[in-house]
Length: 204
Image (cartoon, rainbow, N blue to C red; front, side):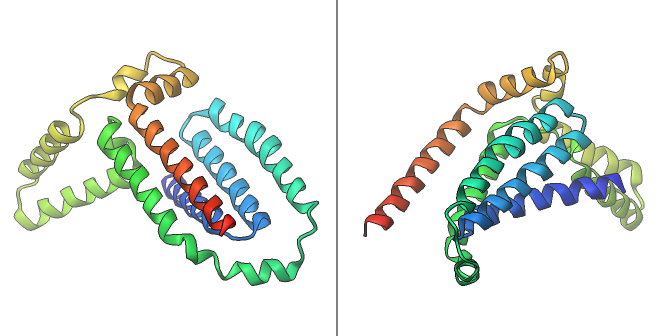
């Protein structure tokens, strides 16, 4: 049950972030942004990263997002504007999908990753192993084969062993600036490109 709830939180975080990007109305966008931060914080708390999860709630939800929400609500946007622009959020959906796909691709190709730490993928690997043992009647061989593939291909660098000696906040700094340098540069260029594109649309 806990594994299912964690997977739902992860999917809900991604979905809320996409809606926050694609929403045309600023109030709706900030509400989805708050939802993203809350779900990400609960997800981090459930997987044991309590300090970062609580920091998400205190810093982002408690200060920045609520401040944005109050400032935007002071503009006095009418309900008709929200209803008119609510159905047009799909115009930016391809851009959001492209950015999300690029983000996931960079994570899987640059950052060392252990698939056994992901509950959904770990259960999927167990199910595949079980089905192979039933169909081919070679349970031991299939388990050894899958374990060898996972160990040789996915676990070439065990980041878990590297970061266990650090504190939670040190883990983020170590992983972000050691393995995520290209990711940070790519995301920065993507954000700058989107801002320039949006400003050109406003000028036109």
